[in-house]
Length: 211
Image (cartoon, rainbow, N blue to C red; front, side, top):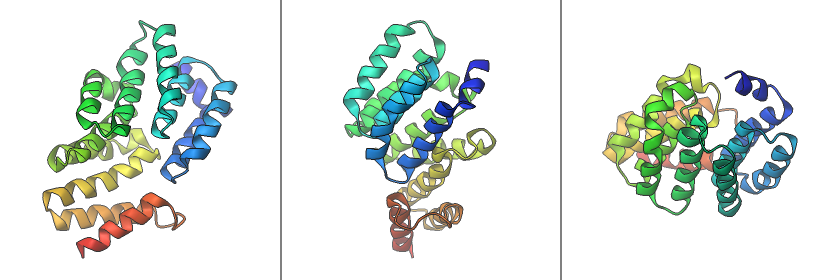
């Protein structure tokens, strides 16, 4: 834990956090270009894992998998690597392939440890997988877990997008009023965001369809 706290206070740590926000703003090309620069600043375990997750989320599957393979060889017995880092990367790569069952299977390894690792990113990924399976009930349960731990996820992009995921999960179940309230929560949270952000435009369009 001391190593993680120290890393987050470095320029590399701040850069990694900003890149996750760039992804939420619909800028995968910029993230792919800058992930390598992040690694150049810091090559420890946590930053390599963060870079692999960023590359996977940004759609650079080849580099994400290559980096995951490198991490697995470099830290074969590391608990964070085996039960947090690698399952998250594998899950995102599966989602990229439109394989939600594969993502859920990859995330089985993280389930006993998610509260202890303290970021709930695997929980959000699992919610995304259930949405892809059009299972609104299970998706809502995962997104609610993220929302319920707002003190842990803080201002992470998956903390904000969990509200949008919850709205979509309710909509799948036909809970129009609950979906509308969840959309409003997300749109209020992002009321000062740039209006041309793709995910924000999608959320506004989906909300209007409920009216």
